[in-house]
Length: 268
Image (cartoon, rainbow, N blue to C red):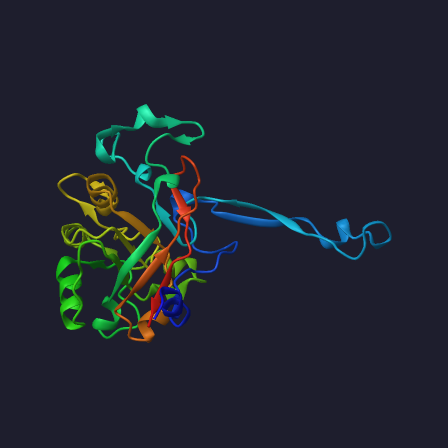
């Protein structure tokens, strides 16, 4: 069977949440998203001059970190130092970063693994404001007979994806704790993602560094592991899929700190 035939016969799960004004946005990335029509069909409809054809177009204004997206490595710094020991001020310009920007992110194409922690615990959604630790990730992987390997894209389901139209509830979704982030990095995955707004537990502060969002530094800065946020994992989990071919293509926004992404899971 050719590669084309394999792909054509695959079942495709769309892991992107729909984008719209009013969708959940992390407070640091407000106002988030705006789309409006700029040119309507009636504006260019001149059948007496140019025939029956007309066109429409719109204006899109959005934060890089709104909707389903992937973080570039320049998104986070630790003591003003980016991944690879690059001083942030050396590569920072008003029009973006000259290193580690979104255009440097390679397409993600490879093995994906879903750890459905909510399903493993027998709940539709993990308790709000709770943290997912290393024991949770390891226990879920063991129970579902899944090995997380080097080079994988690791996805974690909290169950909050079903609340995408309820910002107040969605922003209180469970997230991954410090120990969970260390566990993921030790597995040497290339990217992680979750059905929440920040991947990390938004309530947990690391007592050693006094830092919130520990994983954003440990993954992006220390290990060069990309983070995907606001995934829709409901259909994939309902189908009982644990392993799949993951496809995710960032946009080449030069110097940007992140990019929208359309992640897909392909299953035979």
